[in-house]
Length: 333
Picture 1 (cartoon, helix red, strand yellow):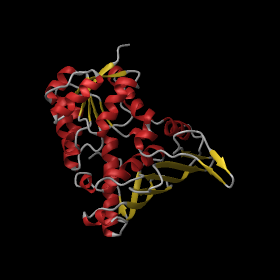
Picture 2 (cartoon, one colour):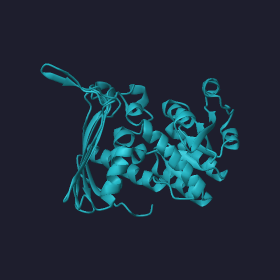
Picture 3 (cartoon, one colour):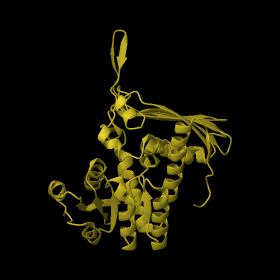
Picture 4 (cartoon, helix red, strand yellow):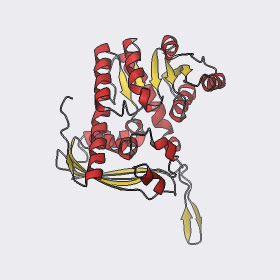
């Protein structure tokens, strides 16, 4: 079957990852075109990957069967609506918007246009998490009692990035919150604590380290710990305890090699999310292509993205007020 031609809008780090995967790693999706507000940058990548560079977003839509939006966050909603109105299926990086009302309006516009719309929560496509999710859903874990997950970056981003990030919980913790809903169920209460070990974060009113406690509707508890600067490497691990078994996902290593010397054993660690998730990023685009081809619902919908966003906002409120925040999930916005 011919690969679905996806145009990539925005060729910052995530856009480049998607473009490279569409050229070399995806099985059912291919790169049709690239677009960026910086025309020279788009032209340079297009030449490198041997695809056309669009002069505008409208031209990108004309040249593509579907579009992947990896532009700055502030443009996600507008471009998603424009693509939907043009009848073009949309893959959009998270978040849809930093404004809830704009997110809801975008989802309503996409749903009215009846085009496939998938949001980029890549962990839902990583082989490790998928295998755990399937066995949990099959009942092999029993009743979930405890959910624990860690997301730790090796090095913090440049402080200039923070202004448009939406804050720590919306930018970082939102991935863990999505996984929590996916593996365990709806969350009814969030309690968050955070600190800024780096003064640069405190000066911007943000944090770089946090612990979040969750209460699920089914009675389970959850604990999330996050860091923007763990220094030792990039780590993303999850553990789900149940009455019959425990699932643990912990694979921060680039290779299987362990090097042993007298009194010590060492293994290498990945440096960032790009190294940790090479298969997940390609798999989510292939899954998106399948949805476009078959009409099946995306594995991660816009409503899933909104639910995770709401939890992240609740975590931010809890951190700022020092009080737990009740969440009424499962209610249509």
